[in-house]
Amino acid sequence: MKTSPLKVFARTLGMWVMPLYVDAAQPVASTPRVAAPLGLLRLQDNGKPGDAAKLVETKFAVDALPASGLAGVSKAQKDNLDTLVLEAGKEWSRPLRGSGREVTFASFQVYGSQTTIIEIGGARLGLTAGPIQGSLQLMFDNSTAGSLAWKSLNVHVSTGKYSGKNFAALPTLTVALDPAADCWHLYSGSRLLADHLPLITAKRDNRQFTVKAGTEGAWVCGLVLADENPLFDDANFNGIDDVFERQKLGALLPANAAIPTRQQLAQDWKAAQRAKAPPALFVNRPMPDRG
Image 1: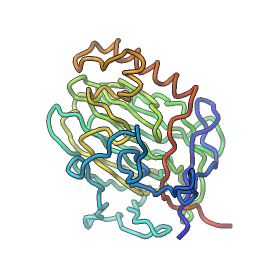
Image 2 (image 1 turned 45 degrees about the vertical axis):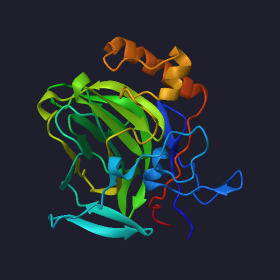
Image 3 (image 1 turned 180 degrees about the vertical axis):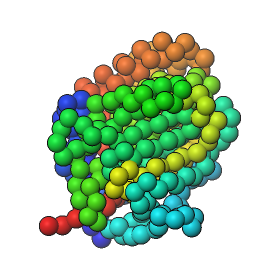
């Protein structure tokens, strides 16, 4: 069975998503790559020596995406993938793992129309019209009060027709919530896109993953909830790959390291990822309409 492609980030106004594809069925060094759920690196079965340890099954859950009998929310097969279909303006939620001040992770693939909002605990993302025709831009709420103070992440995603709807097919996104440090981090694929963003204070204890569909609806094509970073080893839960941290500092930062120290290391890691592309995620996903 031919797998669906992965749109990857490429050139910018910030970052611009072009129709570049990675086929999960293509051989790499004569060994076929098997698409793990959402392509997450620590959920793969065929890791190589030196790769991050695979997450044990008790540390994560692949959500079944139940429609839960909600009006305007249904389950469908899109290119042989279970997909949750939300009509315009409809809302769907699932509980996050953990509780209270625990670090938690949510990885997801959403196809959204304009004004779609994704909330993960005290983190909020949204799709709005951007300066590039035929695209939507990914934003985050930069207000601790949750007053929709949208700020651009400089990510512009081209739109396409999916079952007749204009959607931006977002790449696999991972949000890491760190309530103890009052912040969250965002990964696009395996790249650290933004770090130490402010949590919305009133929603910090609202341990829910919620999608609010925009003007033409939204699809949820996958959701993985985890207790540990599903992309990299991150023993001190600061959002930074432990391999890079040891290479840069010779040791891991203390878990209680000052935020400016953590931020500087995150900036160094992002610069290193720009100089050398991080691993690609091999993932099945729905294709746009033909014709």
